[in-house]
Length: 490
Image (cartoon, rainbow, N blue to C red):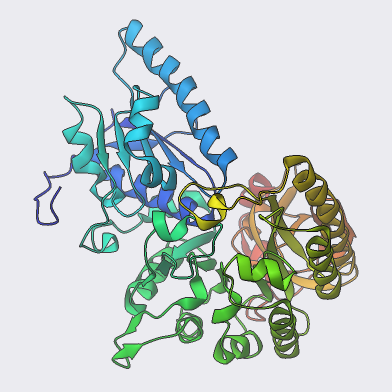
């Protein structure tokens, strides 16, 4: 489809609206994209459903970062083929299947060859065309649209509706940057998402204002390489850094907690480090992938930094914000990794001390330089190294969580807890926290004394008095509500 092609008028949702099921794999970018696809299709008459069985349209929003993630998609498509055939044999309305995201971008026609039940394949930069593309496959399934468009997809996406935003919760992702120019030798992102592109400051602020108006109290600014953000700032007539964008978000009259992910060590400028000290709304949590602790492997990965560079950066960040919780990504068994290289990774982990981390065995991705190397590490060696690394990382995570016991932390409550009378939320360090309390506190930041650290969450108690902003007394608010409302919310 050409950029200037006119779309048909959107259908208005009715009481007999169709059902949409979206399943996302992989990173936070896909979670955001899935929400925007649902927003885009709402005016077409689609309501979201949580199960595929009664859906009229099923979208698999895919990830290509590892081989296992890709194969999961084809396994899921096999199940959906049977669902589609069963619906047809029963004389029910047909179900259409869309594969979107990075697997769609990377494999395109191959998806249609392997699974004939797929109606449409659409890439992460072209999903803004979904309404028109779906109309085009109504009579002729089997369309692939993965060309990188000339237009900016964000100019064509509909604004998230307040109703949908309210249902999705009090925390939200906001894409501010896409693509990557780093070309790490293990990564497919530059090929599936394209070059780095940053959204204008005003566009980001407008989206956040809409989210806050619908009840969102915390935003995570996201991008494949988010701290390389350089969006145009109409206020200055120049490009803005991520630190500037964070300051602009923090200055909004709508008070909101701020996070960002995912970062590259080479783009942690002095102004961004200073923001962790200066911007109160910026949470003390930083996901800063290092991938390995061996300089030889880092060079082979094309990371363009050394282990010492990373350690010095960590020291600067902690000098600015001593209590910051650090998270990272690690790959074991990158081609050519020796026992000594792996030990260097363990040494770096021990020196830094992480609050959390993601770790994986190296998975060759077609088209990347790492996949073409002849010195691939055997699977059993990769697995053994991963297991050893994960034991160390888990010990550090549990130690960090235990260190919060006895502290009072401002917790943003997001949803009811697993048990009756509980509410659950997040600490500033992105830890799951649950307390006994009323549902009316959902969407509020309230001080909580941490009493216990469990395997995957913290347990605490509410501290009477003002909320964590110091502006409102949550107990007084509750006492001012109708008793029946309070009782119903518990």
